[in-house]
Amino acid sequence: MGPVRVAAVQAEPKWLNLSAGVEQVIGYIDEAADGGAQLVAFPETFLPGFPWWMWLNSVDWGEEFLARYLTNALTAEGPELRAIAYAARRKGVHVSLGFAERAGGDVFMSQAIVDVDGTIAIARKAEPTGLERTVFATATEERLLVRDTALGRVGVLGGADHMRPSVRTRMHEVREQIHIAAWSGFTVYYGEGKEWGPELNTAASVRYAMDGATHVIAPVAVVPVAGWEVVDARLPDRRLLRGGGGVSRIFGPGGLELATPLLEGEEGLLFADLETNRAIRPMPKPRAAECRTPSGRIARREPVRT
Image (cartoon, rainbow, N blue to C red):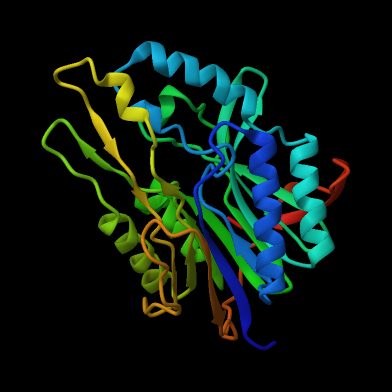
């Protein structure tokens, strides 16, 4: 097999607007496929956007957003995910999508890999961070999302899971050829003498590529956080969020960048051609995972290797 052309999305989500967000995702699928990409990767919780309000002081404001967030989260069997799967099948491209998944009264940080035939495999984040748990539920079972595809073995983790040694080790053991490190975006946080930037997270993607000897696609959302600080303007010790994000990267197995990054805050697609041909060591017996077609029916049971 020749080089695999991939695309990483760097864009601002359509905050709390599921229908607009689905249109945006389908638009990027079309654009990536038209650019020759065989795989396009989206940031963590790109639909309907990461709940950055968690960092702010206003409790009332947070409660308002939580209700809207639940309303605009996807369901695994819903028409929105089926529409995205149909777009992947129509364009003949694999899709990695981070989204908030609503199940009953809970919402999970979920990842989906959609094959070119529209088959969907989903995994939920088992250990959201402490702040994330104010919004998201924890999965009852930790299942790695790794798929054998026509492009090779593709796996995905969201955000802080890259900081968990046990999860990284298990993922490295399955010998991914392409890994998606899906980040929700980065902001600079002011108010308590701390500033959080993208350097640590980008370094985690590089380390993953080197330790796992795998290609890493690291899509990152653009986060302007427009207007959020106004809510806390009445507080003398207010916490502020400054816009950031937009630092998507694509790395080779040695940690070298394979594409010139877009400008920080610029929206678009980052393309690279990956040489994925390499020896794969024997694998342990895989565990089955549930997969669905765009119609929502279970198509077959495909292995998710752990």
